[in-house]
Length: 593
Image 1 (tube, rainbow, N blue to C red):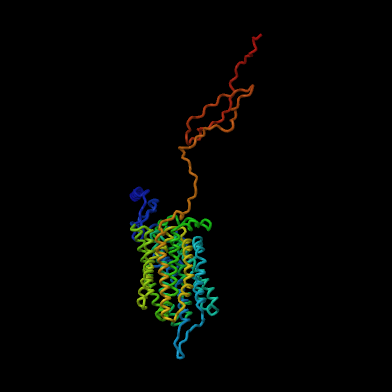
Image 2: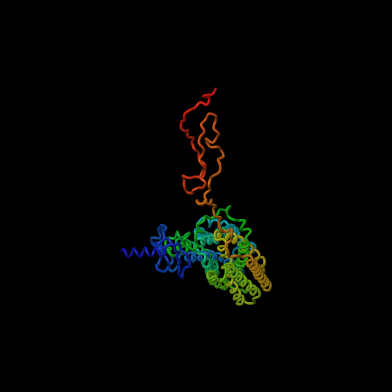
């Protein structure tokens, strides 16, 4: 026992006051403040670090642990967020496929007839397509504040499940009338408007700085995976069952997903009951104390700095350009293949999913490449964001020009696939740039930029419906769609120019709170010596009155102040007068004549 104790004391002396460096391939390198031998962890000698205090387990945790096999807690959050976005964007495909079914031309023995159960005009269809973005626009900035004030994971989950319930109600609303459908689409956009800002609020708590790109892109690739699955699946369900089936299928899927989200996702790592101590230590040490700072209110938010910051405008413009072409593809891609190349609904659904399938795989790859370039100091964060964003936009714009002049469906499919796939690299540019320039305000900035970008989603259906009114005259159809894709390419070229000039990947000076002012404490060795005269005369300092006994002279004050000595002070002090001893009195008039 004495030998063990001696070894322990020797180890304590060796490691005292020395920071330890984590060296594990799965995690980034970072320093941990050393607090003693019993709390020491170097990532090599011990299998797991000391487990921190855990929150009390829920009732379900007694039977099933809140964890996914072979996945860390933060990647479980990313994967479930990906599934949530997939369901949300899959629901957007339901209406486009239902409209194709409702306007399908059917060959019968009596001739050709058009199956239009609701007989909607172009203006009504445009209103329904745009109504979603009207609601989506309203809650962007408020969604950022909600995500900063309340648990972002709960806001994200509630938005998806509420949208699922609204989606299941759309078939019934169609029977009532287009006004009811418009109201439901506005409500659906209203609740989904908080998803992107709240997702950034989640990564503020969960994403280590050098893993932001890969975690965020893994979650956001669900938007494209939703289209990959949603287009062909909605087409199959519409063709072989009914046009109402996709709405019910995705509604039920959203409810099931919500229960999984509540079970496995928590507000922050410290509130997760089953996260490993190693991962918790890594996340919290890499994030530091930034996530513990109180979020500002509306008045305390630096709105003036937002309005005068070129990097913020760069993100907004890039978001607008991306939203323009994304909505063009999501809403009108199936219509393009059907009217331009006479594809059937199921075929157009599968062909339209191919570009988004390739992009879904490239989005997380782009995130890992971006993090690799930053981690190994190959490129600065600013150059990485500009490279991926401008490169993705530029390649998509180039292939859009080729699609505009494509003469057959196979060539158009290949060119559209390459263009849309390359645009996935842009997600590692503007879409995670908020976390670079202002991590504290990332959710608010995401709501602001996504809100302004949503204006494009509101305008695109109106513009494209107006530009593609002709559906029967072949030459006119070719001319209309050519103009549509050339317009999309032009929008991207504008975004490339603006983002390439004004974007930044560095933390902005206004992005951190001003430290509270603290009155500096004086050094005791430089303490002030009070040698000045008091403003009022001290007692006994007046000239003695007639007949009074004059007090002795005041002793001189010390010439040098002795610091930290309460018994010696440089200030004058009051001395009480002391009566002198009695002497023999002699009358001065004696012996005077």
